[in-house]
Length: 123
Image 1: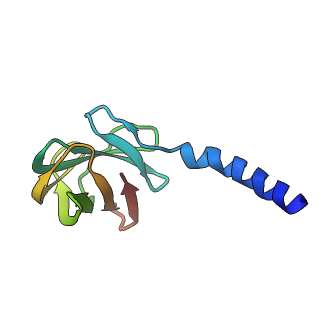
Image 2: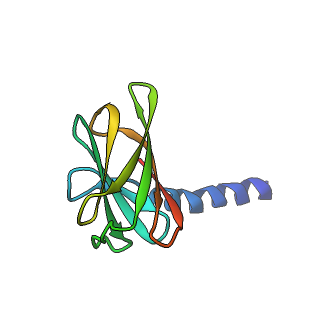
């Protein structure tokens, strides 16, 4: 019985942290998620082939995307779509998908910072 109690307690304690960093609505109309411990990323797709990621620091302050690069891996209509993203002024990384990407798309973006560190944002 004590092992069951410990397992239940561990589950309750970790459940709160699992939901602490869920995707939330961003200021540009997309979903904001953690990208490592230093960054937040907001993925914006509006039913075109253009996809934008807005970068911000851990306090949600926009940061310049210059020097960053990214690769998106998204699931569109059950198919995996991959494409590169480049800085496009301000805090924006922009890429062109080979297909139309709907709003609310799911997937991940692998982001490489100017110092070479790689993080992942999962949407």
